[in-house]
Length: 274
Image (cartoon, rainbow, N blue to C red; front, top):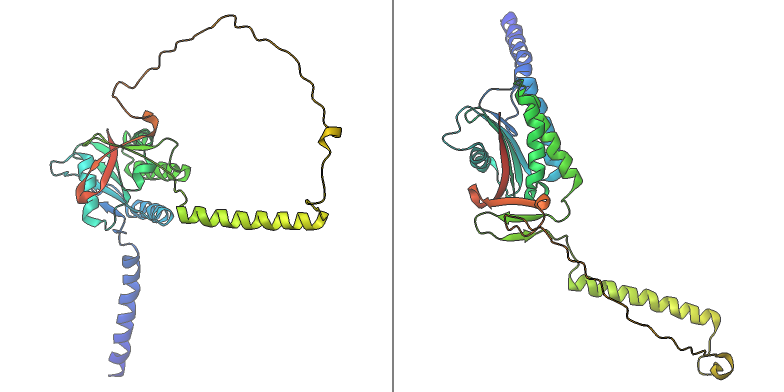
């Protein structure tokens, strides 16, 4: 009986020790969904760690998806639909490696639309594409995430606007401005500080405005001269301003093309064949 009492705890301890590494190596499925099984466990963990840091920085929901079966959708549509399955908010980014359509894709949602213009999306895809020729799938995914994080750090580009390809509407980005209440408070504070400064200055120099008079007759001097301007000629320069052929309402470098995607989110992005 004594031996049995000793052996049973030892067996339990051994089973726990062997279970620890298995639990530690489980995939971090909260960020990485590798349905195509393109990543090793260490690669999946590395990608997940990058996304975790990026998520903490932005407050968005960010995912990495791979698939061998896009279910008849394009890579962007697959990214939209899969994002909608897991996301609870309206803002985020999905990075996709689609082995079915042989495409990589970046899909952005909500607030992220402001940061990722069409031009920036192309740059992100460029970085990922550099790795796809050698089948370095983890490298491609990490490169896209790094480039997206880089552009987030640069902030919303000057002149950014969302172009809704479904309605044709333009939505220009405006930085947060002061409310009327905030403006009123600011003015009152400024007036208070200015009044206090004037009061201190007057008290310091003891000016008596009711007694002091400036003798402008004695201290002033006016000198008038006659001058004539003659009009000679007029030169008019005409310059042709090239307009966008697409009829766009602003610079293409600041444009983010969007539409209403899965879950009613404002969605944009791009893809690249490999």
